[in-house]
Image (cartoon, rainbow, N blue to C red):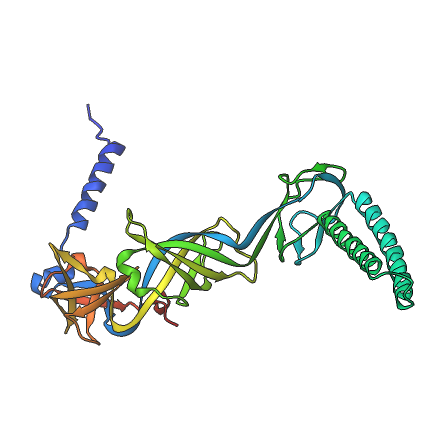
Length: 360
């Protein structure tokens, strides 16, 4: 009786897995040559002098340059509504007309009375010239004309109060009233915002106070417009610090001629303190050891560990105060795979993005 030997799929899989593990652990060509000759692939960057803006960053909320809730000054019925939601208006534009029939009638009455009073005054003047009227009568008639003219001015002012106008140019909000509604002085008709420029108030810590000044340039950004930078200037620095947070309030004016920004937006403000011309390396080139910072400098395919003293930082970049010279080559990718006096093979040299530093 003969027995048949069959290979199960599980057995075949185990054999293949073992073969893969053995293959992966075979020494490479470089390792076969000896550990002293093995070259670690790395990417490097050339140390260079660059313009390095030193900035202050803060968060603030945008507010309109001018903002007001439009209300009536008297209690009256709405006769006409002359605007729609979101309209752009000019200063003095009539937005709402209230019922003014009584005021118009009063003005017509006063104008007629003034006309008659002036006619009587002219008659008294003629009589006075012929000594047929007294000086007192002339003065009384003149006073009557002036009193009626004053009443007319009051009536016209009351009529003007019945026309609700825009106090300045800007954009209207949502309309809150309709024709025929009774409005009172406390009732909101709509809102009006001047957003040709926006104000952004933000706080800066006490130790940055000496770096701020009126007219200093700032840039602002919002998550609503990724990659868009809005330019502005500092318009005011508060005279007092907050005794609790030890910070000072600063106001910036941001140009909004395209009306992209809206009151209430969260803005990231960047204030440029000064611009340094200094040595710069990418942050990923740094190797921290306890409280010190090191870089790996490449020379003749060999790296040497060197301590560096750092200065200002920006996202992705750092200023080197001492430890490096311009033109030296440092490892930026592969720092975890090398050590002092390791042999390396440079795959490529990283070109730093100058725009990340605010350069051109």
